[in-house]
Length: 161
Image 1: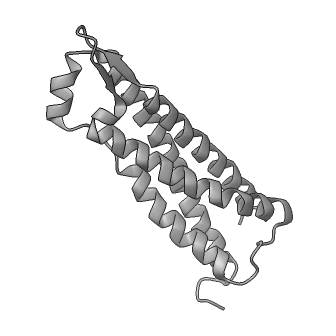
Image 2: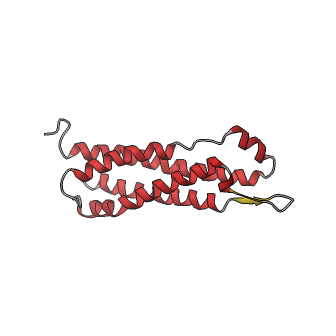
Image 3: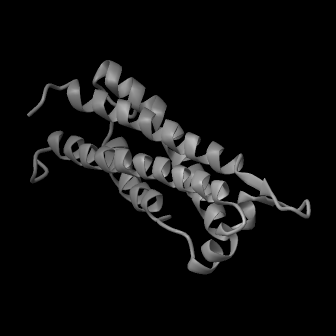
């Protein structure tokens, strides 16, 4: 088993990476727009899958931001801020719920992609980069999810004793 500080520190670093990637993905999406020849502006919110990506990043960032103070305290003191079994359970189930939410936005509907990609490819290039950054956040959250499973079982043993 790794040292007692290794897992809490790893969880904290990965939560910070997750938060940074989700905020970066959201900012890149919000700034993504283009103007057609006739002066019509197209923004990220005009495409449904981009709105879904932004809401996913916002939900994940809110959860990670909520968890950050608890993670900092746990990494510094090696004790939980809330001392009963509530916090490890919340970490375990919360991380298991947020990971699939972050992993859900995987692609663009074909009709939206074909119709609008011919108009401006840099608009979609920025969105693809934002999707990659969101994927990095999902990978970080998956590792946090595994580590929260380890911390949940290491306190009580595998059979609850």
